Length: 374
Image (cartoon, rainbow, N blue to C red):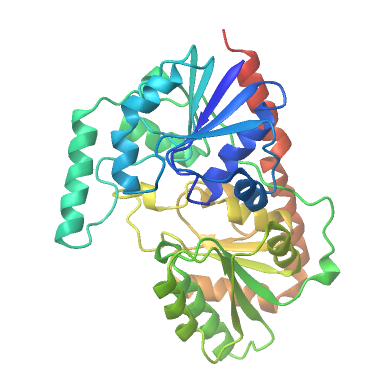
C-alpha cells in the first residue's frame, strides 16, 4: 500500500518527530512510505538524530524554504489535504485537525493538539497572533472526527474528548529504545534532566532544587542537563545560574552519547508544566514524557511533576516520585539520595515499567491497525 506519514514539523527535533519517523521506518518494511512535512529536512540528519534507517522512505515537503511555521502549517491545510488523496493510507501524525482527509484510509495519531487558545499571551503583538490562530480555528472545520484517532496517553485521550468531542480508539504509547542490560554497579551520583534547552522545560527550577540539596550538605552528587540548544539567550542564562555548583550543561549529544549519560545516572528530575494551570492550558504540559520513560529504561529513578502524562508513567513510591512544588521536590530528592536501601528497588521497578513502552509494542499496534483496515 502507499502510505503517507504527515508531520508538519520534522525540522523541529523532538519526541513527537522521533515517534513519527519510527512509524515511517517500520511501515516502509512492507509498504511504499512517504514522510510529508512543511520544510526541507535531510534524511541523513533524521537518521542520525533518531538512530533509524529511512533508506526505504521518501521525504517530501510543501515549501522550499522555512518561514513563519505557525501560520504556514494552517495555510497549507488545503494543499496537504489534496496530497493525501494520492495514498491508500494517510497518517496525520501531528493532530492537524484542519486537514480534510482524502485517502482511502485516514488515521490521526495525536501526541496532543493545539486548542483554540492554547497558551498565555506575551505582549500585544503576541496577542494579535493568538487572536489570528483562534479565528482561523473557529472559521475552518475540525476534521478530526473523519479520522480513526489514536493517541499517546490517557491524558491526551481525556482532553481530546473534553475539547474536541473526539473519542480516541486506543492509546498507543510512544516507543523508547530499551537497553538489553543495565549495570547498576556503574551508576554514578548523577541527577539528570533531559529535553530541549527551552524555557518551557523549566530548568531553572531543577537547578534551584539541586542547589538546595547541595547547600544542605549533600556534596557528592552532580546535576547534568542534556538537551538540544534551541535558545542561545536561555542557554547563557542557565550558564550563569549554575556558576559555583557541580552542574553541567551538555548540548546536542548523539543518541549514543545520551544513552551513556542515562546509563550512568541514578536520578531523573523533570519539572515542565509545574506552574501551568492544567485545566486552562493542558497542551503546555508533558502529554506523555518520553525522556522520563527513556531514563527509567536505564534504571534511572524519576522525580517528576505531578501533572500531565507523567502521572501515567511514574507510580508514587513504587518506581519513582511525583511532586507538586519545590519543597516536595527537594524533600523527595533528599529522601532517595540518603536512603540507599530503596534506590535499587525503585530503579528495578522503573526499568520494569519502562518495558511497557517498547518499540516492539508500538510496531505491533500499528501492524494490527494496517492489517484491519477495510
